[in-house]
Image (cartoon, rainbow, N blue to C red; front, side):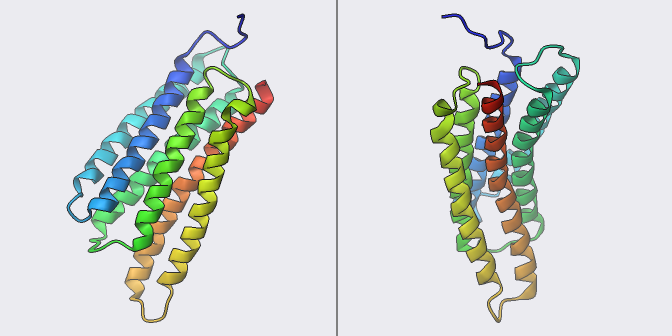
Length: 207
């Protein structure tokens, strides 16, 4: 069957590589949460993933700068690369602060959010892989819908966690630290939805 899809697969390799790093980072964060405080080595692994993701991001942007014909619009490639990289960056920023803020125990909602984030990155990664072979929205819809669903659950968890932080009698320093942790987690989950929005836009424009 004749295909109008571009033969050059390098951009797809880079997208999939970035998505894989997001999945891996989320997995390490989940291990950190479930094994805390005996799982601090996961912070180092997240940092290593972040370095590798940065390298892929630079490769993608350099290739975008020198490639005349791209698989789809340049601004969409730039947006997708940026959104995938930002997921990894937010996870890394969160992990670093867990170490530097001398956290003694984790809030119960943190584990819930780590689970949501892990599931969202997996669904996102599946959608990214399908970009290589299809321009039909129906082929990606199950993954896109799942990311949106998880983002909504994450929103509810986030609001509940913040509300609990502001209960009377809670130590102000504890509130400040955990509000920041939850914000980074929320940003990473939101980033999964933002990336799927870019993918949806690509499909609609090129279908």
